[in-house]
Image 1 (cartoon, rainbow, N blue to C red):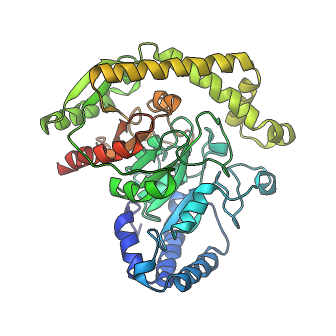
Image 2: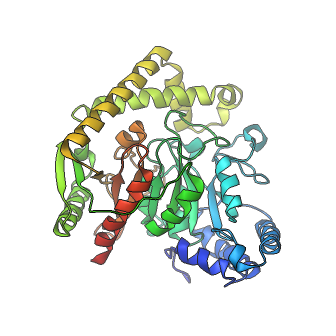
Image 3: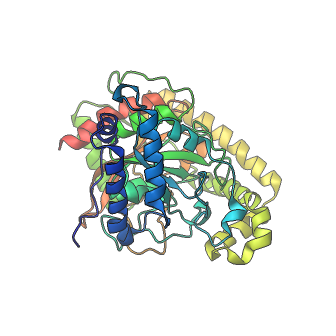
Length: 435
């Protein structure tokens, strides 16, 4: 293999260089398309696109003509961004990782894409998704170990950033589809507070949970992109070291022993750096939390796909079809009860955090390293309660398994506290990367 598959690029450095004209946009597009041609056949992060080079070169010329002076260039001037293939982009068909006719799935361009383009970005292309952002995996491989899954459903977005094809990619998370693939691929994943980035123009999975998120090589990249994409962003200072909460009990025990050992090592390192770590029994009824989330998820998946499935059910993958059929059997009053359960859980978790003085919750972002094989995207269970609550979360790279697979640290903030989460997580990232 002539070219390494793992070479993530700093969004902040790349954006600054492009604004300064180094390189110029035509050269940048040539490099980008050349890298996609060489590397993507090995990892399958991008949806195939005839004419990609011509499309990007035309957009690059438009940008260069519009912003001739470096001082007037927008923050993501010329930056190549991967966009998950459930997000509508004008001029690019939306397949949703499915065999359905693209015209059936068409819709107006997503607001998140409008915001990327307004910031000067180039849409490098659509990134591979599990079918309809559910569980039936696409062809994407993990750049660290191509025989292992990259996670999902935002598989292509995570892999594209890990492989250095783009410095920024957009994904979505219903349960674990940003945090888990970020951990598996050794990059930073950010899932904002539910609703913080408008979801219009995106194929729905379960609208009570569906959230747009980001992948970058490091936290500085998220800090650059998030204010451009999230509503009403108000930067806050990093401030004193946060109090870190560990949700003890049956939830944490879902992680594999090796992942828990690595997690405890990270906690010890943070404690030795002077941060306070407090252990709190948080989800004693975790099995019920999981059940109630699945009630909402399956019901809403079935409702989202009612028309498409009625017309094209035979084209759906077996995993997706099975989930839809389960959802069709769930009564509306059961979903309503599950939504009420969620509100009570939100209140309970908020009280527990306040009582313990917790600023950030920490947990493994996945049950372990990326599983071998491409038949599954892995288990989303470690993201499940936080997605259920709609809280913002990060996955920070944090070591490796003995086999060399990336591990991460999941950092969860308060609902609506995205700015503080990013600011406080910067200290954690420094401690984790000092070693």
